[in-house]
Amino acid sequence: MQKAIIYCRVSSERQKTEGHGLDSQEHRCRELASQKGYEVERVFRDSFSGGGDYTKRPAMSELLAYMDGKPYNSYVVIFDDLKRLARDTEQYIKLKRALELRRAVVECPNFVFTASPEGQYVETIMAATAQLEREQNRRQVMQKMKARLELGYWTFPDVPKGYVYKRDPVQGMLPVFVPQKAEIVKEALEGFASGRFMEQEDVRRFLAEKDARDGKPVYLSWVKRLLTKVFYAGYVEYQPWEVSRRLAKHEPLIDLATFERIQERLEGRTTTHTKKILNEDFPLRSFVLCADCKQPYTASWTKGRSRKFPYYWCKTKGCPKRYKSTAKKVIEEEFEAILAKIQPSKQVLSLTKDIVADVWRKKIADRVWQKERLVREVEQTEQERARFVQLVSRATDQSVVATYEQRIGALVEKELILKDSLMSLAEHAPNIETAMDIVFDFLKNPLEQWKKGNIHTKKLVLKLVFEENLAHDKNSGFETAILSLPLRVFTLPEAQKGLLVEMGGVEPPCNKGS
Image (cartoon, rainbow, N blue to C red):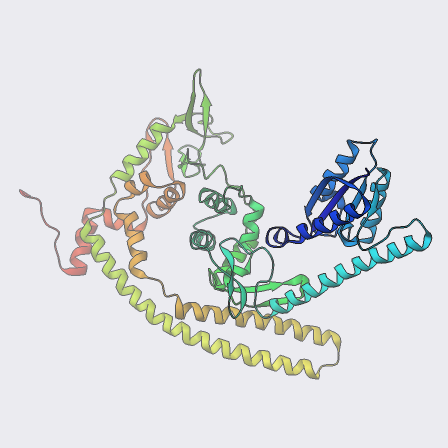
């Protein structure tokens, strides 16, 4: 009996798992084989798009390799339809030749292949028709996607990290939060905007620690794409389709003002590699200075006879202490001894929190004024935009029209930012109690925060506690530390006493016998 191979294909994994297309195709192909008296030897199934290189289809590559492994056999390769072979004329011809070179004959239930010029002409026309249908379908899909995008809906198959598609009974497929992942992305975005993460590498490390990509590696290129997605601010845009920025239907993670701060930082910073600074093994690297040259220490592991040893050392050319190292344990114990001495009075901290709260109430009053100012700016921007729209309608010179349109675009962008800032003032008033608790937890016991925190927490301790970097000498240890202004006040007994008297008329309790 003549040997036959059946090839079935659907254009997506979804059709493979949710439909019966592959089963139906195989059934029709088996019926043809039964009618012709063929013995079906193998069935190959693909779920791959009809366009593109046929050699990239896994099952088609397996089919060709299978025939290559049996060069003395001749097969009939049965397809359900010419479109299953390829929906691209060039690829169709190439695949047909590849099969013929392997002495294979192509057959399908709804078309009779012949070697006559007329038959080959009709076959080519049908292949071209399949390509036309594919390109028309693609155009229609893109037009529908563009129209939906213009209405503010995210229409692309992949939704940004932190979101998943969920069907809404009114609006259709809509991106919604994945709670844990969304919080991680939000913390990364706001951290970069605020300067908590100084470089993109800091963001990358944070996202890698949080397993933001579910086991996949986090690359800087992926971080850059995440930081530049206006999607997270609740807007959509797509320049290839000439869809300008507009308010989206999904809920945002951050406000537009935060997004713009991120873009400003990206434009102002080109350096993204800071691996040497953010190292869990050496948290004081780049913070501690050499006492001689006042340049930051570097740090590294040095190989001994049986194991490695960690050291901080000066690498500055010309410095007399260059290559002179201090053991990690020694320098970090000396540093922790400095932190242990920083213990602000509970009374002073409590009174300071009251003062901060009073200052915050004044800030709230200032927010009201800012809101009124933003409302006025929005009105002025809308009026100016309307004026330029009228000028465009009367202009005849194309260069003048282009200038007016550019100005209108800038005003639209400004209006979006102002409205977003206005919305942020109205809906996202920060919780001062929470903010003060976080800061004062660091100030009241810096050593505890240092010991229990990760590398990011330790870097934050350095920023909050010290006004300047610390200089260190291998023989004499650390020079006098200059603390941040709040801690200079909080930790000096004389200052504490004076502050208490000034703020509340309260003398700190005296020790017995004094």
